[in-house]
Image (cartoon, rainbow, N blue to C red):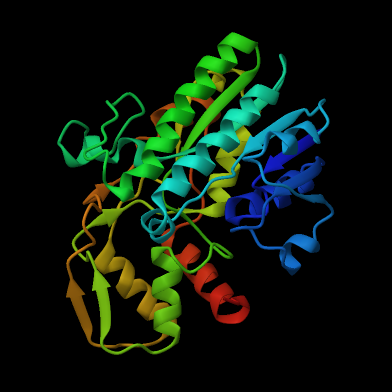
Length: 316
């Protein structure tokens, strides 16, 4: 299979590339390297790597057609990045996808990476249960809040992908990722951030939102779900949650990270940042029905693997 990974130098993209190579795919990675890394992990893979700004239609004009699978992972993500430049989030995430949709041809097969943030407002306002299925209403609580620009860009993306696929005659599946973590994901996410601070011996140890909960999914499990969905014809035309449905309290997560690090600092709990959803956990019924998926990596194992990688390999 000839496979195109757009945004493939990022966290999930790198792990997905490894898996596709192991499955015998001929992989090409395209990235602008604004967040993706041209590091040893990427250059050590047997993939073609191209640098391009996907917000420019000329980038797509330079890409040949005839791919068996196309994965759209490119986006500005991360709460700090979103709050720092929300206008960029809207511009980059929207333009990169719209130019892709213009470029796609009938018969193409697309995976589009979306997010649980798309429905976070419905949970906060009490319109959605937890665990949350794909069918809940999608709510933006404050269209003027920088934090919601990422969700807005992905909501538009979901609609654009579904309607354009029908109009142009290509196949597409949308995966909503839920708190995926693992090696090489940067430092601006909760498990890597806690791991790095624990490794530095921070004391007292400040913890934000200890009373909140999340369902964390190790990256290998998320990649398995993505690959399975792309190999399942019944998945096309659908939005499917991707994650792990074992919910974990943030306070308990912090204690696990500190235990793995072998430290016992005094913990100082403070409120979660404004706009942070209190609970997030996906209902994986649809994913299981379509693919037979079950998460394989438990939280303790995943945290140990992640902590070890950051202790041994992390470079800012």
